[in-house]
Length: 178
Length: 190
Image (cartoon, rainbow over all chains, first blue to last red; front, side, top):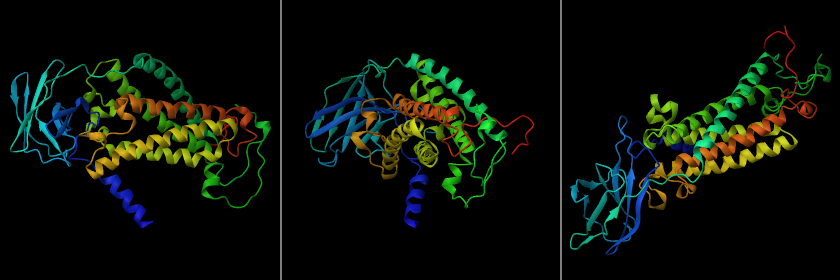
């Protein structure tokens, strides 16, 4: 029981305060080969409490298997962008700015002795849902409104009924039904 | 008119699925509806009002953005919702129980996904090469759509189950008062 409580406590209190809060990161490119490395590019929206400016992250996907990357440089539309090892993501190198559709990202990674320049990546359209989301929302909202009224009315009715705690019987059929 | 008989003392589960079932069920459903409305609101922000996704945090997000983005909150709610589905299930019978069980199974999978997310947040290691915690079906469907669909898939069978459970013809098979008529006018409030 104590162990279960301890696990539950750890899970419940382990707030990922140093991690990126918005878990809906967008992958910009995956499986880019660069020498011995495989790299992916992501756009993440860090939760700083009062701002949500996007950031570009370069992930070395096989970081544990390869020699450590010692330097990463990033250019967006031929302009250098400051980049540093991510403090929140293992094997990640993080910029302080995001990218938008049409930007061209050029990344160079180095292991200290050799450097590899990745194929430039053009930022595409953000993935959109294949579902008719607007109709789904309209229909769901209408049904939810009806349900909410029903639930509220029945909750009030449940409270108007005399408390029957401890009794084991139902109202007799003569009481009728709803 | 109510017939009353003395009976052996009931345990917690018997009371919860007997005399307490009606109130417990409706309070539970009220909480579920409020949570579902929050998801719908977030969806409307994204697909109807065209807000940027990171800023579409639902109604609560206006006041508590950190809370909405906290994995702990989502995980805790999913866990409590599952517990409610399990605890209130014995009070259902027949087709109502089948629909309630369907809701329970879907919520079970939903909780597994949230557990994966929370485990990644705790361990500091993420799945699928992602820089942030991510779940299995999130590889195919973006998070807001996915969790909207999860909640919809849990909510619909739950409402159907409750509707069936509270139909007048269930009054004779239920051990609770959920399908019984309203209290007569003038009856003393509980």
